[in-house]
Image (tube, rainbow, N blue to C red; front, side, top):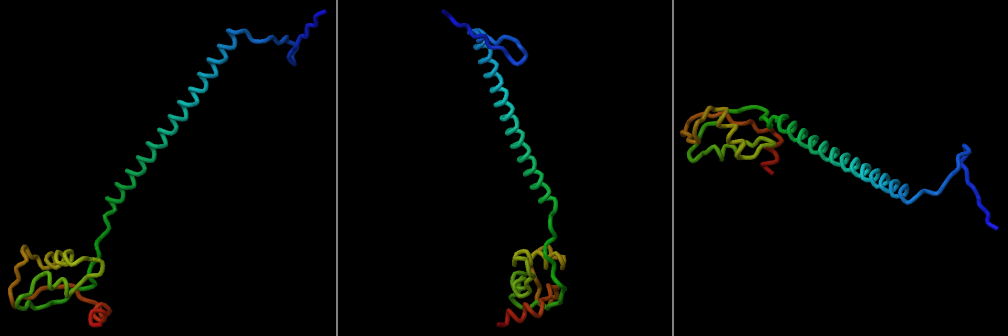
Amino acid sequence: MQHIIGITSAHGVPVTAPTVGERSRRARRALRSSRLTLERRSALATAAVVALVIASVSVAALAMLADPQPPAPTGWTSVSIEPNASLWTLASAHPVEGLSTPETVQLIAQENGLATGMLQVGDTLLVPATSSCATALAQR
């Protein structure tokens, strides 16, 4: 004696086992679905990388455009040029906080309208005024 059991869905529709063709179609659909998911993730990752690159370039461009102003001396004082004096020795003797000696040389030359570094003994030049704090530290 054989027993046949029929399975029905909740709606009363008989449920049958999928055929070989149906199983291969389902497998192809599942594969296609996983490929689409992978492609979406890949596209999302690519978009994220592109966004980061654009943001980095934007930040770098804005940083270059910001161009902070170099430190300026607190004031200027006049000095008389002595024998063997140079712009370098003047810049070393009258430093500006935040500027290197070559930058201070350029600042002195610009302030005095000097086209060359040639100085004449007895001439008067404007040099950055040194603060009393800087002078006190230099004397220690």
